[in-house]
Length: 474
Image (cartoon, rainbow, N blue to C red):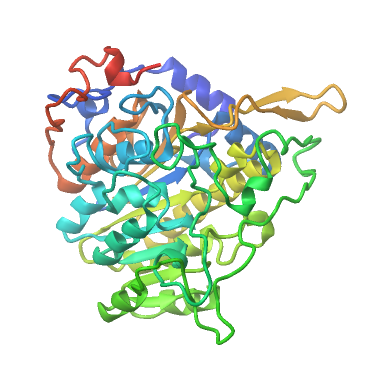
């Protein structure tokens, strides 16, 4: 177990064997795949702290004390480049973690030729495992979308919603009913954080990086606050994520779809139970297992600091109660979505409280597994898709506390930490590309090694891991 602080853990990591890792070889699986354990986990949990770098983790520890992350079994680092960019966006990185392939920024689980990249969730469904997605953003946002959908732009959230509605994911919890429901009598702006969030809606640099959502009032650079001590987060209140719920005077929900499709109604006909409150979630998770769709806000969920309900921990616990009843094991992806948004806004309080909330959820997940007696058959991988904001933690000349500094309002290309526990957890320790994590998860699901081959075209990565195209152009 990691019985030391984060700094010591990093030193242990750096003193270990640094494996080059497979960063896009179309023929062979290298790096972590070369040291696979013979133990096959029955259950797999992938936890993604979106935008969470080492500085975010260190600040969260300063804020709340010892982290649940420190009790994980193994630790490593992951390189996060996409197919043609050294600095990835969330959809390309989530695809690497979900499918084991490098793709273009802004795309969702698709190769450049338009062919789909099969995801770990889809492999799990084929094996008869139950599956789940738990997020604090829209369930159609980049990271959850890459687990189940295949589109050329992460901005195509209504199409992503259709693919989610047609899939067989047993448990879907988060925000974003607006993408599943038709409009009523008023024009609804379907935009959220993505307009685009990073490179523009098409992922090719056409956007300003934020779009038209009201949350953009806290633009990069306006969120600098001084953290004097771990318990003294100075609250600079930013505009809430949700300003208005899409609920009519008659109490009925409506959304942003102009095609008049009611995807929730269709899912209910297919056996899903639709819920939209924390109390309903508690009841649903205590009853007999059934497919569950929980959409708790019309857009993204509120911040943890503003009383998000249900919390990420509560949603994760409910998902585990349901999925752990599967006769064939389960795959669950949990995302702390809004760490990234705090980084984009350069809002230190926002990023730190979301990182601390995510770590709380790691602790809740591990306690459930221990109490349920399934910890020794469940592989947990906790990582980030990228770092956001270029956050550094400087010593303050005023009090000896922290003075955060941001270098960007976008993502960076620095490696992100990886924490693992459970059977097979040593297989993704060390230093490697994030594609190795995706490939390892898929091979853990299917129980055998797989050859991951890219479609042959002029945008395929070079065979050599050292080639610039394999690690992303600078």
